[in-house]
Amino acid sequence: MDVPLAHLDRPFDYVVPTELAEQVRAGSRVRVRFAGRLVDAFVLERTAASEHEGRLAFVERAVGEPVLTPQTAALFRAVADRWAGNFVDVVRLGVPSRHAAAEARGSEPAGAVEPGERAGFARYRAGGSFLAAVADGRPARAVWSALAGEDWPHRLAEAARVALSAGRGALIVVPDARDLARLDLAFTDVLGDGRHVALSAELGPSERYRRWLAARRGAVRAVIGTRAAAYAPVADLGLIAIWDDGDDLYDEPRAPYAHTRDVLVLRSAQARCALLLGAFARTAEAQLLLESGWAHEIVADRAAVRAAAPRVQATGDDVELARDPAAAAARLPSLAWRAAHDALAAGHPVLVQVPRGGYVPALACVRDRTPARCGTCSGPLAAPSRDARAQCRWCGRPAPDWACPTCGGRRMRAMVVGSGRTAEELGRAFTGVPVRTSGGDRVLAEVPAQPALVVATPGAEPFAAGGYGAALLLDGWALLSRADLRAAEETLRRWLNAATLVRSGGQVVVGADAAVSTVQALVRWDPAGAASRELADRIELGFAPATRMAAVTGPAGAVHELLDAAALPTGAQVIGPTPARGEDERMLIRVPRPDGAALAVALKAAAATRSARKAADPVKIVLDPYQLF
Image (cartoon, rainbow, N blue to C red; front, side, top):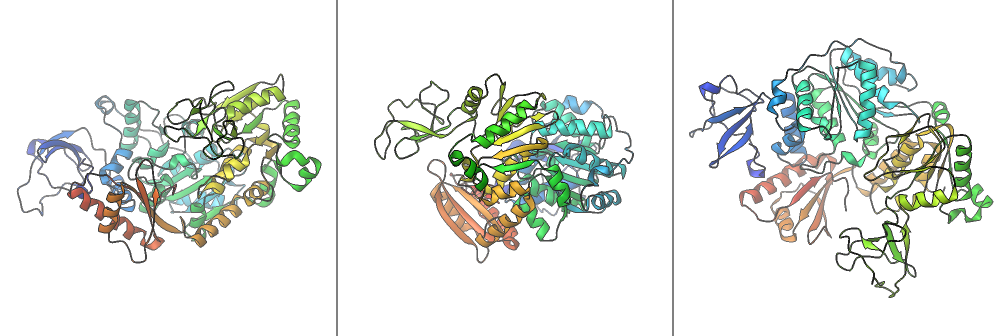
């Protein structure tokens, strides 16, 4: 029943009238009367009899063709149970809205796919073995560390072709629309026209539903897409792959808040198909799959890694500090200036990565560095342009009369310099060189192979034909010092993704202390070692993925009411409360990984109890939260 109440998250029996017997099938959308009103519902199965002893109501109307398959229905149920959610919430994520016009159009079946070359994975140990397993229909599972500069869209397309040529389906998920556009071109190049569909939120509702139906009807057996494509109804899956699983875009913001990587891991186990997690970096979650023996590594030899990676230097290393003592404090030290100058002189563009967008996104008191905050909403104050007054980033109110609450001072300085001011400063330092910016609502897809300075925020770096001559990774401290469990992991991921855009023989300069382990992992191009250390630290401290955690957020009384009603597993640790947005509070519950399912059951049962009582204050339950605070 499409009723998002926890205590109603179960099947209900209805009688199918004779006149609808041909239209109502397993997987169909229907309209039924529930609690005195018509609601949408999904048919899970048709049976000859019901175990319900009372009187049954009739199905009122059939709506369109079936949208669920036995496989996707099982996946939706498993996701809802693992993350303490409702079946219909998962259906909303995985099944697009119906469009009758799209249903009326037929879907032309795609032609057969012939086997092709597999040379792309030959540079990696176990790469050929993995593709052989996909061709044989075996459920191989691997974590792929791509070489710097790797044409990963074509590698994924080649792996999908192996599955398709064996008569199986393929599902590939990427973080955003830019990655999807590259993957779409690669699939067309490798498979030919009409043999795959690309799903994303940017498509119009009708077109998205039409493409989704092509997969549901079996007209195409290859689906690529962004987050929601993880639930696409691909029949007889032979390969599931996800690119860059550490990207925060995979963190689902809607109930039941399941991370895309974990959904695909679950789906591959259900479908008994091959799974490939690929990236330039590596997450602690992927490392756990390796160390547990559940997955195997696809990596290149160190000689190949060193040959493919650009030269990386830190501005804070001993040699550079001896040459330029001011390098530790300068935002653009001489090393970075020389690298940019040499690349521009050679006719190549230079990538400049800065952690934040805007002009000056954070201000502080000149005297004691106390962060400047709005007197109305306590939001951070920022300077949107060179001559603009400070204003709140949250409510937009100007703050002409701001005074430091600690010392009473009225002068402010920049805490972090954004991409706008960085572009302005570089324009003055490199006169006559074009300066382009990419980030926010203006993200460049590609820049030409000619001298230019490209200032981009993490994740918005455009591609350059032939690669950048150099990359300057500025303000590394701003990334590394974030109050976040994943700060080091995310920083290395952002640096590696930017550095891999640099051409062979180019140079990468990172503005950070060379003694920091994350910087050393970048210098050595060692994401595996960094992930191993990160996982060991998480295990020692009892954080995910070593444990299962739940975050329960809401009004204080409602949170405590839910936890009092929950039969938590023995040994569960309740941490908190901590302040959340507004007047809400958050409690964390931590259990060993084997008790994760019991934790989900306990929280779901407690939520159902509150739902049945019609409790007024909502409580948000997130299993395995991507961000703890």
